[in-house]
Image (spheres, rainbow, N blue to C red):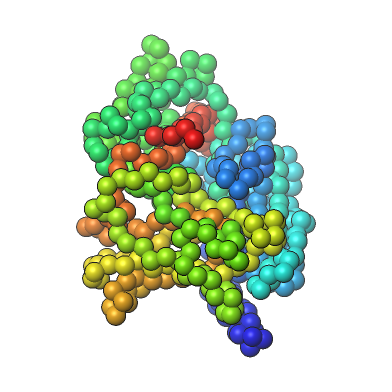
Length: 425
């Protein structure tokens, strides 16, 4: 066991050395830069609950965002954070630090806790973000010691003001959808209490589905401008503001490793780290829609065995299996918020001809997870393996950006959150 344990940490260490040798390029997206950095969550502090973890969006003046992450090492490190103000397209804005921050832009992360009774030791870090002066897009950057180039993670967050009002003009019940595979958001923006000159050029809207950036609709312009009533209308007929409806997310329950929940086939305690084998999945493309209570691709860290998920939840290799009759002529990935929807080497499924199935494994912390299988192809629809159903429950966000003539940046002047096809419990 000691040999296996040492091998695991040598593996992590070798990956880190390779990353350091290659250099770390700052990405203006949700990302980790070292293999040991895991389970990065940024959320409003007053909403941490195993079944409620909201998007990192907050109103100006009531900043309440908290960052949590784990470092799979045995001793704490000196980590610091800084904040970068960004434009609507997530490029660095021209503002200086003093323009958007009240404090010096170097924040020491001091709240760290050792894991307790876990096979894989780790340090759990918590950091409460400081107040900012201006609305807009922001990138949180965490780095090692005083070397700002030694980045370990980046995380996006948004700060808004309600300078404009957003009114939905389409139903949040997609039963009326003209395309039974899509969901569309029609809406109006009223700016009677806020001056906007040339809204076609200076106003831009971003739509998100289930907090995802990989399929977000960006730089959406109004279909109609009514200056006399200070109103912008977004109602299109070629699906410019539509999303693939998708299906309810698959899920598995690792809240307990002693008594595995739904979706878990077995737990191997003799491996290091422990290995959790999930029930084999199958494509759902030809299946009728079936309502499942999901969390829209999210995940929550929970440990019902000990009661403390943050420091008592262990890390386990989680094995995914997808049965198919034959190999598909496209790359298949398992994605969710657990891996930032990333289609990379870790999430890529490998085909096993003997078993006629795809498989991969991810190192995940004990909890409750949603996931789905997607295809990366120019000819095959992304949700081919899951299906698209207009009845699917999805969450949507509307971000309204404005660049005033006398400003050098994009301001987030309106925000709305909506749930399509929501069922009452």
